[in-house]
Length: 137
Image (cartoon, rainbow, N blue to C red):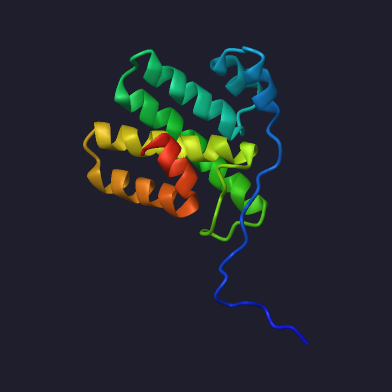
């Protein structure tokens, strides 16, 4: 008889393929992809990233990233996530969530919301050290 390893922690969460990813890869504008896939973490991450790159106000980046973050949490829960545990950067469909989380963290820092910066950056590191290194490191 085998017993579960109670010290192992929750298994990694792997989100399903995001149909918005193909559209973004094909060059579609993030705003159009969000309209077609409003639940897509990848679409919101692309929109927040584009806004940041184009010099949009930090509040705009924060708002886009927050929407993507919340849509991501819904999707993570539907896929077995229990509020903590690994969300590997190496699994491409997870990158929308992780990118939204990183953008939310940096936008919070930029607008002076220190507690949110600390919470989100810690959450990112706890979810995926690789994502933290790639996005904030």
